[in-house]
Amino acid sequence: MPDSEGYSNMEKETSKSIRSGGRITRRVLAFFACLIILLLLASRLFLEITGAEAKNGYRSRNTVYWDLEQEKKNSLDILVLGNSEAFASFSPMELWLGGGIPSYLASIPGETMVEMNSILHVALRRQHPKALLIETHALYTDLEPGKADELLLQQAGQNAFQIFRLHNLWKDAIEKPKNKRRVWKGFRLMPTIRPPKQLGDYMKPDDGTEPIDPQNVRILKKIQNICERRGMALLLYSAPSPKNYNMKRHNTLALLSEELGVPYTDLNLKTGEVGIDWTTDSLDGGDHLNLSGARKTTAYLQRMLQAEVPALSDKRSDPAYSEWNGLAARYQKRESRMLAKMRERAAAQGLTP
Image (cartoon, rainbow, N blue to C red):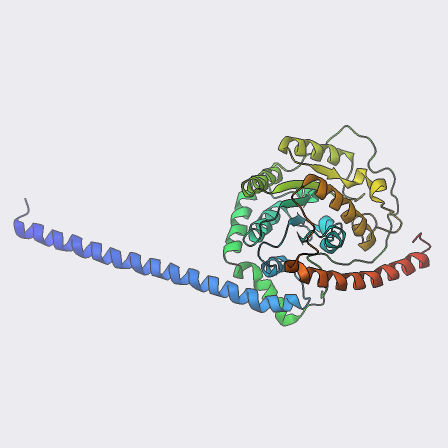
C-alpha cells in the first residue's frame, strides 16, 4: 500500500493536472471567443463596405441580405419571398401607390426553399410584418436528396457570420461587374416584350397532380410555424407563367394549401380577371412577366391582401413614411418613361399596346 508520502505526491500531481487542464480550457475558450468576435466584426465590415457598392446599383445574388438591413426597423407590413417568378410579378411601389401598404420583395433568381427560410430569418431580425406572401414556384425547385438539414444549418451559419456569404459582394465591389441596376424595394423594372410562341390552353382541365419535394414541404411547414409564432398571416400565390405552371401543379398546390390551412391564389386561373395580355405582358416568351404584367398582378394581389389581412392600413399620410412617398414619385417618373418605350416597342413589333 502507498505510504502517506506517496498519497501526498499523488494529490499534488492530481492538483497540478487539474490546474493545467483548467488553463488549457480557458485558453481554448478564449481563442474561440476571440474568433467569434473577429468573425462578427469582419462580417459587419464586409456588410458596410460592400453595401456601399450595392447601394450604388451593383447587384449580386446575396445583395438582398444587405438590402434588408437598410430598411427602417418594423416598417414593413408585407414581406414577399420567392424566386424570379416573384420579382417579375410583384412591385412594392405599385402596392404603395395603390393602397399605401409598405412591403419588400426579398426574392432572388432560382431561390430555393432553403434560401427562402434563410432570408426570412434575416428579415425578421428587424421587421415584424403582418403577412408573408410566398410565390410558389420555389417549391418546385428540388433539393439534393437528404441535404435539406445540412443546407439549413449552412445557411444558419452564414446568417450568424455574414462574412461567409458576403465575400462575393466584396469581390463585386472591387471588380464593379456590369450588372448594375436600380431596384425599388426589391423590384426591377423590366420593359422587354417577348410573347409566348405557342400559348395554347396551358391550364386545361386535368385531375392529376405533380409531386413536390418532401424536403421543400417540410421547410414550408417550418416557415408556417414561424409565422404562427410571430402572429403573421401566411399566403401563397402562383404568378402567371405558361412555362412553369399547369393544372397538375395547381392541384398539388391547392391540396397543400388546404392541408396547411392557408389561402392560395393561382393567378394562372385568373389571367382574364387580372387583365393579362400575353402579347404585351410577357418578358421572355411565357416564363416571366414584364413591367406591364407586374403592374396588373400587383393590383390584383393588393385586393387579395386587403381582403385576407384586415389589419393592413393605408400609410401614405403617415409622416413616418414620407420617404416612401418621395420614392414612389421617382418610381412613377421612371415607370412612365419605360411604359412609353414599351408601347413604342409593341407598335414596332405589330403587337397590341
